[in-house]
Image (cartoon, rainbow, N blue to C red; front, side, top):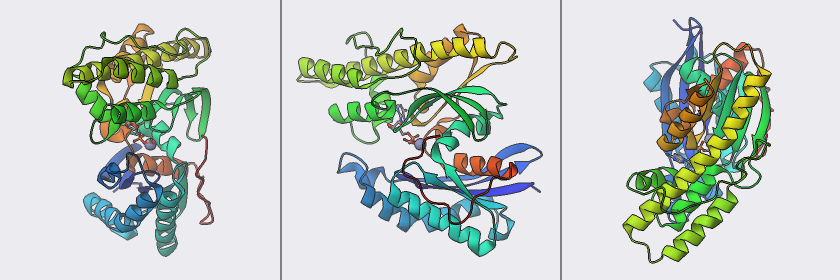
Length: 344
Ligand code: KG4
Ligand code: ZN
């Protein structure tokens, strides 16, 4: 039987998710990972509507939690603790998840863990690959683009961040501009498969600069210009624009990461197997993974990328972050507040 079983709850944006993660003989096992996307609810509005998101979480969460327990094949009395995302994110959704988690913890007299969503992403490569600390992490999601040194659970050093848009946001805006249906990033990736990445020369912002920061708003603007000039757009034009955008984004990430890897090598000359990990929704992109793999290999560094289902928002990463905090004795009071803004 497992040493510890943690229920995780994630409601910070437009996914309602619950998961049970177990610690068994030192290993972390995902016993269930249930995710309900609200993409359909928000489709007509061209973006996530906070009030609609919060109401959808209220309606779905009890059923999603029950499904996570059922899929894991466990009952309430087998849980060791409950973890919920308490920030950063949309306040309404955060309250729904935090209140549900706290209610379960109170009713079953279990420890509660208030988890930072970004910490969930940051630890996801450790969950999927059992990574040891320290590792370098490129966190690329809808709201964040950062390079972090992950020194331990709760111990993160930020080496770089975006000075304007997050990369996921740039993918979403590109999809919207080009009229692609459904979730932005995956739609751009799908279109890019049939496209010519060399057709539209797009900038790689901050390329060559010593600082480890990112910038994507110039790329977004350049893409809009290219699209306007090529209009009216046929299917091939759209595919070429997507491929060119994706290549520019990947090239920009690779340039920044290459500098960070040099610093990692210099700061930790004794690491026997230095690792670059990627996490967050954009890390699900195969072209970006391939480009980062190249950049890492050029430095003799291993690239670790969780499976796509652990890159995009999920509750397994929240349960796992909670599990690691529980083991470190860092539980939270039921009065723990939600924090819509909460840097790592
Ligand atoms: O981590 P995540 O699910 O939620 C946040 O914490 O923000 O990331 C969502 C972001 C969205 O902007 C989405 O378009 C992007 O990740 N994304 C992708 C792909 N899948 C999701 N971007 C590029 N390629 C993908 N395959
Ligand atoms: Zn996320």
